[in-house]
Length: 109
View (cartoon, rainbow, N blue to C red):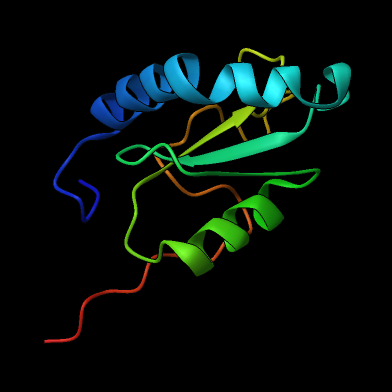
């Protein structure tokens, strides 16, 4: 279970709610649709988000501002952030961390 105490399904549900209710109109309406295919990572509690061409860049930017937030990754105009081809990595809303992103730090005891 993630350090937030919430499971991936709950994070996914909340992430979709925030995306549809707060973020979608902003990112899909910005620049006349030129954000299509870009990655948006959002804080599932506050609705703060970052938008970038690469998932790891968007995640790093938001983590810099919100180091303890629970993240949800989405691709603008797509059903999932990543597609599975062949037998490789499958990702979508991954409950927080995209491939290649910095793993969460464990609290020091």
